[in-house]
Length: 373
Image 1 (tube, rainbow, N blue to C red):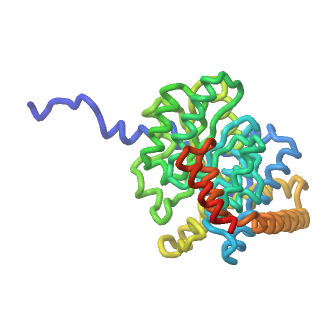
Image 2: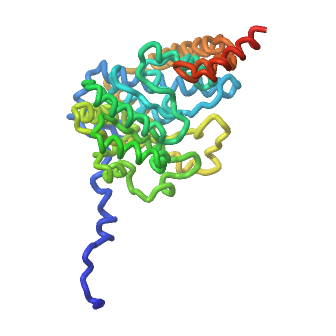
C-alpha cells in the first residue's frame, strides 16, 4: 500500500470529539452563589426554593447524626452522603410516589424521602429484617443494593414490568456512583432497558472516587454521561452541587421516560467530601487537602444559602432550629430501631420465601422449637 494513501477513517478526530455533546454541565447557580440562568431560576417559587434548602439541611443533619451513631458502635455499615445533598435531594424531589426506586448503599436519603422511615434506614444498617417494613406500607422501593451496579439490572426489569403492565406516568429509578459505571451490570441494565424502550431513569452520581480509585484512572471515557450512547440512551451532565439544576434535569429525564421514549442516563457532577464508608476508609491516604478545597468551595448548602439569604428567605437561626429538630427526630428513630425485637434464625427463614419451600418450612419448625426453650 502506498505510503501517501489517505486514511479512510480519522480515528483521532473521532476520539477527540466524541464526548463533546455530553460535557456541558447544566447549571442554574454557580459556585459563588450567583444565578447564571435567570430563566430557569424563575421557574421556582420562593416556597419551592425554601423547601429544597430544607431538604438539603435535613440530609446534612442526617449524615452528621448518623456518623455519630456509627462512631458510637450503634450501627453497621453506613455510606456517608456529605457533599451530595444537592444531587440526591434534587433527584428525590423530582420523583413521584408511584415510581419505583432501586437505591445503592449511599442512597438512604432518597429512600427515606420516597417513603421509608429513618428507623427502617437504621435497621437496614443493622441488618435487621424489619428494615423492609416499608414494603407493607406500599412504598415502591427495593432495599439498598450492596453489589455495585446490580440495581441497574433490577431497575431495567422493573421498568419493563411497568411497560408490560401498562402503568402510566411511572418510571423506575436507579442510582450508582462513578465506579459503578465500570461494572458489567451497569451496561447490561442500560442496554436491556434501551432494547425494550422501558421507562427507566439511570443516575450516575459522579463523586470523584470509587473508594480510593480516582475518576480519572478508573475509566478512559471523558464523561460518564456518554456511556449510554452505545445502547441508544440519551445522556447529559448536570452540576450535581446545584440542586436547582439537578431537580430540573431529573424532572425532564423522568418526563421523557414516563412518556414512553425509553430510558435516560444522567451524570451528576458532585463530590464525596468524606470517607467512602464508616468501615475504616481514610481519604487522607489517597487525596490531599489541596485537591479537596475546590470542591468544598462548591458546597451545595453554601451555594443555595447565599441565594436565599439575599432574598431574605433564610437565616442562620432558622437553619439552626431545623438542624436541632431533625437531629432530635433521628435520635428518636435510633431509639426505636434499638427497641426492635432480637432476631431469631426462624425469622430469617420466614423471610427467605413468600411461601416457604418444604425444606425451609421444616427448618422453621425445627428452629422455632429450639428458640422456645
